[in-house]
Length: 268
Figure 1: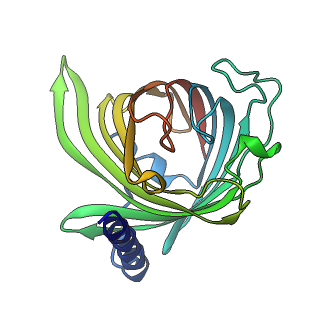
Figure 2: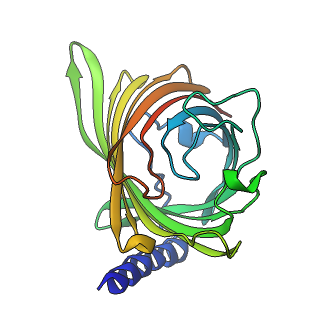
Figure 3: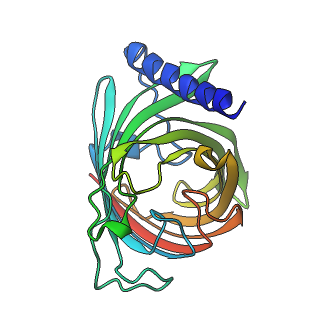
């Protein structure tokens, strides 16, 4: 039963990915949250983020991350490179002035399509076991595919200020395909369910739940909840702070005990 459910999830993701490539010429429908319409006109994004994490799994540790993304026209809508630099000291405060290289990730995003009047965007991601030292990474090559959607729930005036409320969700399947045979295999499905409130197209508050099913642990589940507050300074700059905590499921991949994150992004 567990394997049947796993194969069904992987198959559904694969079919949507294929659908996204095949129907990419139908119409260009970027998946963005409320207040982000200016950002899809940009050609790229550079993000710098600092995570202080307590009781996290291998890839969820105290680190500084750099993400560089390019937005394209055509079936492939995005190329992204993520460079994580986990601290050598992996407790909550870590040591930001003594980073090490983590497992590098690359992502290819496909142009969004409509599915029953919902915008669906898909992506493929590859993780390379580049961590040095090796115990700061998973030690495995990882392949994942996912899809996401975002819909606007309402738009109104509250206290004479324009306000938008949007809902977004994502599903991602991650598996290890090669690497160190002495390290644990990776096979989990991760969900993200978020509610975002945007004020004046400039300030936002976002609440996200991230449940995970770990197929390597007989479909054991875990989840974290995150609350993010952000500021769209202008059409080129974003800044935010986020706090997260585990809801249940210690030892499940992509979960942690507590986290505080601060980030800034440049859109160009």
